[in-house]
Image (cartoon, rainbow, N blue to C red; front, top):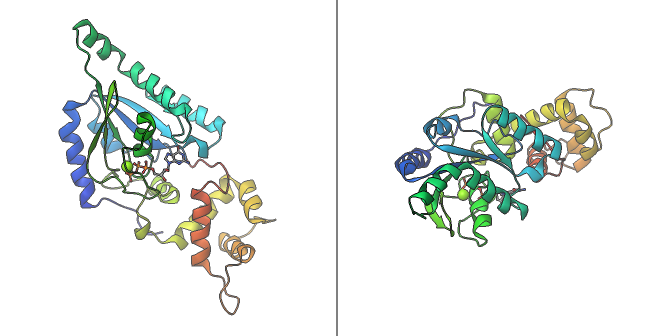
Length: 277
Ligand SMILES: Nc1nc2c(ncn2[C@@H]2O[C@H](COP(=O)(O)OP(=O)(O)OP(=O)(O)O)[C@@H](O)[C@H]2O)c(=O)[nH]1
Ligand SMILES: [Mg+2]
């Protein structure tokens, strides 16, 4: 597969903007995608925020099993990280996030109170593209204030959103300048955090079938009515083309169109509840 990397100029600008605003914030929410919670940690950002209180928000948990969601939070906590698993689409997320944020910033709030200060806590909401940062901010606000969209790179500049006790800074999704671990980068490409325009969907779907065959054989079989997975990945890809009717004139497999459909199935959760790392 082609080497994966995505760090356009607007991300350099976004990182600089976050650095400049760092002093002004009390804490950080790093929004991750539950389907690839490790891969979606931008270590460069974690380093930059090392002096700050960080809440790791494992979002889109509706797309993984509850068992995995609980396990991931436990693993994060074991590493000393404060983490919470939510689905921004679920009403329960709001209370959960509020209580976690206030727990995280308790000392600071108490200190302010003792001094007779009641200033709102400022939180920077960061993470890689498309993890649901703006959706979470809207959920916390109760109204749509931040622009959202189902592709990577929707939020452009910075945007402060004020709610009673909180001020949230929405930021554009940013990637690390380079991916040393290409396997993790591949997971991000699967779930739609990379720029689709740079991706070869044929290659990506091939890799996805290979990974699913290994990690989720039952889901793969079930979704595409494949009886036997004991064959080459390319043959399975061909089987899916046939099942889904992706054939060209003359009966050749239309791998390209089939690839797009498979990736879309995965992203919409139609193959099942899947976690990659
Ligand atoms: N299934 C599911 N989808 C979600 C969830 N949260 C957000 N989404 C969807 O994910 C997509 C991206 O959401 P955004 O809020 O725009 O993501 P963002 O992190 O602000 O993205 P950028 O601004 O591009 O960095 C949208 O289509 C949302 O509807 C969730 O908890 N579950
Ligand atoms: Mg956004």
